[in-house]
Length: 133
Length: 453
Image (cartoon, rainbow over the protein chains, first blue to last red):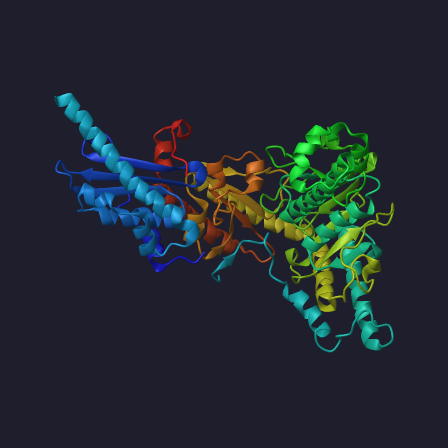
């Protein structure tokens, strides 16, 4: 399959690969996809108490498009607020990387990973608040 | 060493330069039609075809009269299966094959099943019309069939046993190592079974089937044995007498000959009959009409001769290289699994899963090496290989599989280069893989509730 230069660039030079401490109360972890489907994406966001995404890390098992999609969103979310990050849609990812139609799935995973990571962070914060009160 | 490196010899093989040399005169001065009986151009072409027929026959222990030239193995497979079903339809209509066969076999069988079903639907309509005493529309069939209890209607039951032009097909499972279970094969045989079609060597996993045992069983049961022998012929010994094969599909381009030419071996003693699927001038003893592709046939013949003469040395050399590749990869990388039997396997095949590194992205990383992914993950359905699934290979591992196919022109230097490149890329992908990290931490991936997509 002929990939766009952007996909190849992210595949060859993935941005922000890595692991953050899951237990850190300021880290939200989103794990989406399934090994049986051939794609698993893990996105971790370090979010300040006032909702600013300070850092992002990913690890992905999947095709070149899946790796590129997750690498791209780590770049995009950094410096954004949680609310801004929630507005990133799979269409933006697919357009930016010029994904072929059979690979749109990968961009959907990237959007889901952002949402899952933010949800995890919110859950953690709610649990902390409940404990404090 | 030249890049890119070709390690996809199951898909096709490069033509041997010696083959091209013998073909060229038949594309230039000796261009005659082998069916032209009245001049020297025709005679020369006919003689060249006769020689090639002999060369192909010798490779498989047959006689030249048993070789029918076709456009390739897909046509041979179609001719063997459809030809037997058509010719022997008054004897029976049951076929047995394996779930791991090539699509040329599976899709041909599926078509024959559809033909039979369509014919049965027509008969149902006709019988219900008789019983109802009026014309019945297809929409009414289900309701009326229940009312008239067609399953116990003697006339309909008799009709349904008549030849339909189609077939019933049993798709047998294989064992974990990819080989057929002979007891299950025997159990599947019925008095209506006319054909067993089992491949020689599998195109994805290189596993070689026990042909002599299958052939002996078929002969004992009076069932014809067709073998799609494409991947094995010229690489490991194949003999139609020792293996009691009745029909065998062969193609030239998997043995360093030109594309677009193949053959079907059709046994003469005891005689096997097939109905043609292409009608016309009655070429190839009426079994396959069409002007012979003389130059390609000459090339095919020469490729067959080279394969026969060099088989033993070549198999040993390729096996040594394959083992070097296997050892190089498995020594350097943990969590690798070889798919299919190691013992009964083509010398040039290595189908290997690198757990937690996805196959397609690995291929993207080693783009200077032409290999094939065990998983057809470029398809919209993202379904992994049906062959690996039939072996019971875990879906994640099926997505992490690569098929290496070594051949006549593979060099040691290439193998060394490929080992280094693949090891580097697998490590890089695993460093990026959440699954590898979790597996290393001792997390059971099966215990996680994945969000399926």
